[in-house]
Length: 487
Image (tube, rainbow, N blue to C red):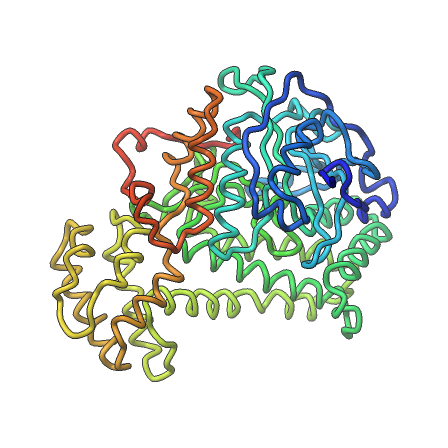
């Protein structure tokens, strides 16, 4: 029977010269135990959950699969807008990639021990942060947002020092590639143009082969990555997701959501909300995410400039960001409001959306958009569930009448619109308190809540009446939860 141990692994990244990585083995952990497996992620690589579970020693890094070539990659980056120099996989070890119907998928341990790039760290991940990454990776995929995936979490009672002493864990995460903006910045900063070109050619040939025939393949690469990044962040904004640490070393060259640390989903709406307690200046607030994404693309552009050769095509590639973001967020918000994108209503719709966000502060983001599907075009008889979310109800009433008039202008059908809106406005997102409940039970070796929550999050648009409480407003105690860069 095939297991993770018998996967037909390759390791394309290992085909690059040794300067790009360090080969090393994971550091074993004592008495491992299985915390969770994503059946949907397992299916991507042709395995059942049981086949994954049967490979516990590999999931935690105590053994390696046949044909594995474990390595930790080097990269650099800007952290909180400041050049941080060399970074690298400080607690991640890539152990290979496997061919799938969707293309090659890399598998990587996170938390598998010290690497040459661990700096002052211990190379470990704690159970708390590992569960958060596992759940959010799979939740984001179910929401239709480009993301890395998580195959499994395995734990050990070996202690790890953070703010307190916590237990260790390892996530096996998956993505077509873990190459980052910072991977290119590393070679640019060292003035190693040959290595920079090798990396760019590797990325183009493996992930963007159509760009090889472009007049300037490196400018085309920058444009493609810039477009994907703009689309990804538009998706974040549309569901109220906040990444928390949008450093260039956490930005995927494939436009995937990568490196889940102090993330959060918007609850009571606040455009300036900061989900990362470490981010005292609010650089990565919800409102700032689009412009930070653009800034990060500029950092990538600077790194690629020696290959592109001229400023003009470099700037042209970057110039796609703002119109691509604007078009994608406009498309997503029209869908969330159940409106057609009609040119004749462009100015009306922009004002309608701006005025909505002006009255939304303090209102639960996810519940508002989910309940909006119940509003009727002809009268206000369906308004109460939505109206009850507001303290300033008169402001909502005024906005709702304008929205109703806009629905009538396109002869919107209530039933069809509600059906469509409920396919883009999730009922269930990974609220911090839901993760915390699952974490606390898992810390006591009870993984039933983790399994149940994962199942709910993998169907975020379904009603799931038996799980209604997962869609509830956060309890009072949740207001004290904080996540930071140690999360």
